[in-house]
Every structure is written in C-alpha cells, then in structure tokens.
Amino acid sequence: QFYPGWNFNKCMNPAGSGLWYVSHENGKCVTDCDAGNGGTCGGFANLLSNDLYSNPRSCCEAELFYRYIEFCEADSLLSECYQGTGLFYRGDNGGKEVCARDCDPASGDTTCGGIVEDAYIVLYETAEECCTAEYNWIDVNLCAARTIEASFGKYWPDKDNAKCLKDSEMPSGQLDVEVYDSLDECCASGIFWLSKGECFAASGVAQEELGTNKFYVDWINEHCVKDCEGPAPCGGLAQAWDPLYDSSAACCAKVPGRTANDCLYTSP
Image (cartoon, rainbow, N blue to C red):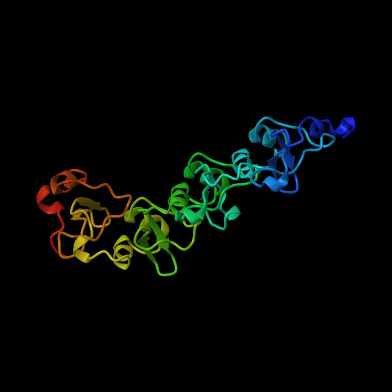
C-alpha cells in the first residue's frame, strides 16, 4: 500500500509508534496505537496535527499546560495509585469553607477536597500558608485547625449570650470571630460590657475557681484586696490592667500613706 508523506508515521509504524500525543477531547495524553487495543491507546496519531512525545509527562507539559501536571500524567497512564499531592488549596474549590487537602475523599480522609486537576488552583505546603493567602479575614490558627480538623483550644466571645466559650468544647459557627488565648483576654476584649467576674461566671467558671488569690490595689478605697469573690479580704476579681502581687505586704508597699496594719481590706 502507498501512504502519502503526511502519514509517514503510520507507514513506518503500522501498529503505532508507542509514543504519546495529546487528546484534547479527553483532556489527557494517549499512546499512538490502535484504540481497539485498549489501555492508554488513543488511536493512531496524525502527524499533521499531533506532535509525539516520549512520555506522558512531556506531553502534558507541552500540550496540556492548563492541567495540573501530576494529575495529567497519572490520568494519562490510567493510574489508580495517584492519590493527590496532600498539599492544601482554597476550599471552595472542593466544597469546604476553609482550605482543603489535595486528595480523594473516598480515601476516608475528611480533610480531602478532591484531587486537583487544573493548574490554575494554587497549592500550598501547609494549612497555615493556605489560610494566610486565601482566607486572611479568618484567624490563621482557627482556619488551620478547621482545615485539618484539629481541636482548637482558644476562646471566642458569644456576644449574643454575653459569655466566652472554648472552641475545643463549643466550636464557633462563625469563622470570622475574634479568638483569644485565655478566658481573661476574651472577657476583657470580647465581652467588655460585663465585669470580669460576671463574664467568668456566665462562661461557666465556678465562683470558687474565680480569681488568682493574689493581691491588687483598690485605688478608689486606697487599700489592698485579694483577687477573688467572697468575704474580705476578697475585693472582687482584678481587671486585666490591675498589677497583681504575691503578698499583701508587696501590694501595700504600693499604697502611699498606708501601713501594713491598715492597708489590707478586712471588712465592708
């Protein structure tokens, strides 16, 4: 049989060259061989329109630059071994509110958002990097914890109910909420209209657990009181800005005109 020059490949390789060319219709690279052979065969390449490559990765890089290279290569090879990179990407591309991991949810890992197929999706090494770049209105530590589904031990203000809650015990339903390292900070900044004692009590802290039992200066009455709720010398809970002292003597030394005998609060 005679084949014109444009079909030189078929003339020289009647069973196909075994090299790779792009199949734009399928969004992957295929092998130059009879499609009836199955596997990676995509039919005989047409050299008028198909460049040939020695491996699928080279084909993907040259022809399918809009696909994520690792995925394109695995898809072209019909590989079931490829499980994604395990890196992180913006979660709304995978149906999540925070970042998601580049892996298959069918694996049982609920942090997976699906295997990334397209090159326009940016991948990040860590959840923190992804959260900083993609969700800068969410506290980065809260976002990262939600991304990897880890316990988050900071506090957030429930302003509707005027109390602070520990996220690991009662997760916030709002991702843009302010978070604080301690209950004290949360009450002082997040529920500022209540006193520290009121906020602590509303937040579930038992009265006997309130305060540090250290001493601070009550400047209105010019004496020292203990940081606790209850009878004297307790003077109520110290505010976040009140310096605390380990002993009443150290506290009284800060109150001018008072002696150690008449400085400590003893009765209303």
